[in-house]
Image (tube, rainbow, N blue to C red; front, side, top):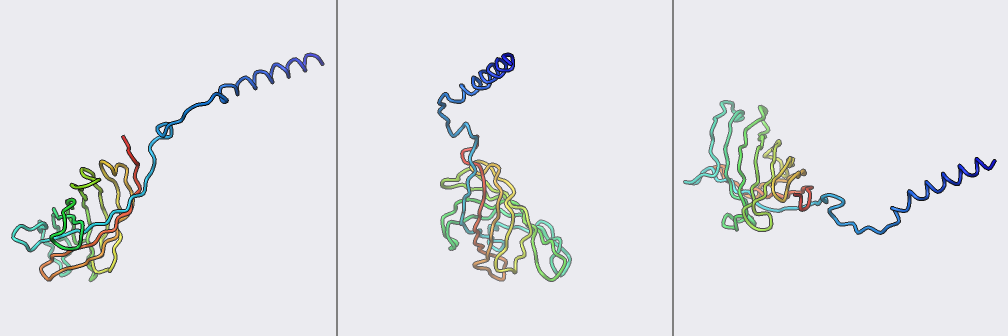
Length: 185
């Protein structure tokens, strides 16, 4: 019986001594927990000007179907802080869009990087890849990545056309919601 008591006592001492390091105070920093996720909402306007003497959108492939299926347009459009064409330029929308729907409803495939050149997000970008049914009042497109302050970004962009003319010029409002890591290095 003494042997079982001795074994139990020794086992109890071993187990309790393993908890001693846990009772020593430790100062944790935010880095101990890794980068923190952050949600950011952005609001800006996209100014597409295919008809100007210096167009920001240029057809590079002409589609032959009545629905313009197959038409590809390269863009380097201004991102504006406000809805007026003379609003402050905060970045560029660079990439292309293509007519990707053979039915009556026009829809574009958007492959665009929103590159920010002013303000808090200067040097950062977001990547959009998705379907844009242009006749819908509000269109939703996915954000699939980013650079700079938006590394590992994911989210969505809601687009609504605020102004357009028969020449194809348009100002489109964007409300963007993204999740990304704060101060990721």
